[in-house]
Length: 100
Image 1: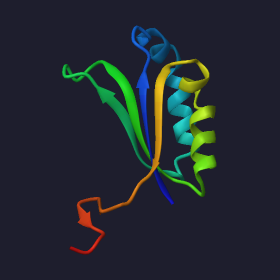
Image 2: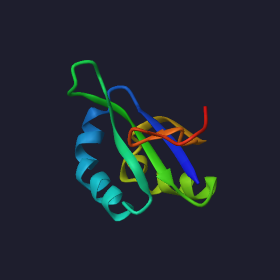
Image 3: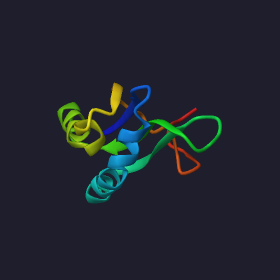
Image 4: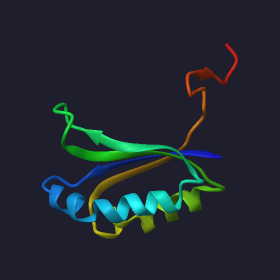
């Protein structure tokens, strides 16, 4: 079942994001079979990240919570907020998946 995970970084923690970026990306690579999409939320300058959005296909909310808990960013204390919610794929890869 699909889950959306939205994370927000703690203000002033860009150094934490930078220090753990490689480990975070490796973590995502190890779990690519569950990833539908993932990426950083960026400031308007298009350069500075302030959080992330992950769309994952997981078995349960508990699995989604464990995914976030074990992310190197989370372990390093980067996040000020984490939202986990079930997600309905209404459109995916430019295709409508639900009836009008």
